[in-house]
Amino acid sequence: MPDSPDSPARPRAASAGAARLPVLDLRDYTAPDGRADRRDFLDALRAACRDPGFLQLTGHGVPSGLTERIIAVSRAFFDLPLAAKLEIENVHSPHFRGYTRLGHEITRGRPDLREQIDISDERPARVLGPDDPPYLRLDGPNQWPAALPELRVAALAYLAELGRVARVLVRALAESLGLPPDHLDPTFSAEPRSHLKLLRYLPTPAGSTTGHDAAGHDATGHDAAEPNAAADGQNVDQGIGQGVGAHKDGGFLTFVLQDGVRSARQDSAHPDPRSPTGPSGLQVADGAGGWIEAAAVPGAFVVNIGEMFELATRRYYRATVHRVVSPPPGHERVSVAFFFGPRLSATLEPMPLPDALLAEIPDAEPPDPENPIFAQHGTNTLKSWLRSHPEVARRHYADVAPPAGVAPAAGGGA
Image (cartoon, rainbow, N blue to C red; front, side, top):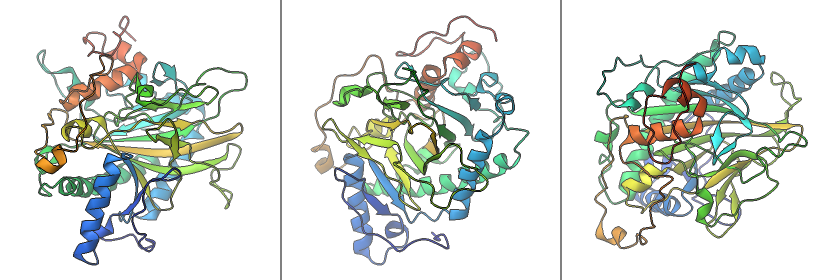
C-alpha cells in the first residue's frame, strides 16, 4: 500500500503504559522490511486489542492533505450561523443524518457538550414492505449544507479512503487471531457500512451542571452509549464536563482523527501556527480505576475495538470504556470519528479461534439487561441510534418496538 508523501519514519511498536496508547505502523504489515516486522506487527496488534483495546495507527497511507482538509471543512461547518446548520438538522432524517445541535445527543442519560454532523454511505432510501426489519430505514441519503458545498466532496473522499484502510486492518486483525487474512472478507464484501461524525466539543457553560459527569467518546459509528459503562471499575468523576459520557463503542472498528484543544476565538481560516494545543480530551479506561490520555500523535488515527467485534472474538478482544472530557472555558476541540462495520443485515458468527487463544478468554460476565449486544448488526445499530437520539426516534420510529435497553419513543408526528 502506498504511503502518503510526507509519511514519517517508522516508529517501533510502543507498549501501553500509564500515559500512552501503543503505537503501531501499518507499513510493518503491508510493506514489511522483513518477515519479522510483519510477525511483530501482528503480535503487537493482538496485544493492543486485548489490553487496552485501543491503539494509535500510523503508516496507513492516508494523505495528510486529506486529513487536514476534513478538519478544516469541519471547522468551517461549525462556524456557520446556527440557522444554516439547522437547515440540515437530523430530526428531518429517518436515517439519523445531519446536524445535531449542542446537548441534543444523549450518553448514559445525560446530554453531551458537543455539536456534530452525521454522514454515512450515500445511498438511496430503501422501499420497504411491512415485513422488512426497521433497521433497513437507516439506509438513505445524507443531508448536505447548501452554504458549504465543499463539505460533501471532502467527506465522501474521506469515507472512501478510511474504508480502504479499514479493510486492510480487518485482514490484519484476522491474521492476528491465527486465522487466514481473508476470513472476514465475506462479512464485509457486500455493502459494508461506513459512518462519519464531524464533532466539535465545547466547554461546560458557566454555572451549569449539565454534563458534569464522566465524559467519553460515544459511537457505534452510531453513537451508542452503554448505560452502565462505569461498571468496568470506572468511577464517575464529578466536576468533569461531559464531552461524551463514559461508554463502550457498540460497532466493529472506530478510527478517530484528533485535532487539539484551541481557543474558541481563533480564526479558523487563519489558525495560530502554535495550535492545536492542550490535551486531546479523549481518555481510555485503564482497568484499574484510572484513565489513559489518548494524546494526539501526528499522522495517527486512534483505533479501537467495538462491542460487536468483541462478541465475534468471543471476548478475546475487548471493547474498552472511554470518554471525552470537555475543553476548558474559552476553548474548543474538533475531531473526526469514522466507524466501519458490515452490512446492516449481517450477523456476526463467533470466530473459530485456535485453542491456545480460547484458553486465554476470561470467564463470561453476566449480561447487562440494559445494554444487550445483538449479533445482528442492523438490530444493534438501530438500538444505539434510538437511545442516543430520542427526538429522531419520536418523529420517525414511534411505530417500532424498541430493543431491550431503549425507552419507547413517546408519541409520533413531527
